[in-house]
Length: 108
Image 1: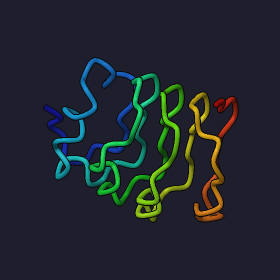
Image 2: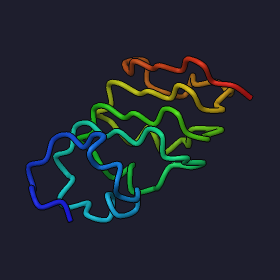
Image 3: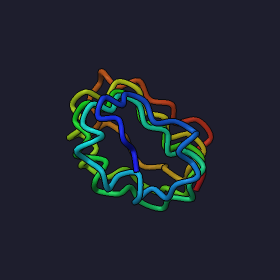
């Protein structure tokens, strides 16, 4: 599905695909730096995301997430995390301090 092994960004053009379809090609996505999964109605994060070790930017805004799994700390290269417009109200102190987080407009 995603032919280029050197893919660096996967943005809105991928919105026509289901999240599972995008993430099933982990070998292809090993060099992925930025992933936009906003507006997907996600209530949880697929575990495959935590295998994308080169990921630096993750946009999971505008979903139905209520919490972030502790496995998100496996993303050692992560620098930017957008979790705005979800339902996340718990403490995010478990996240590394070097990650810039946008958590605006989270609601219960």
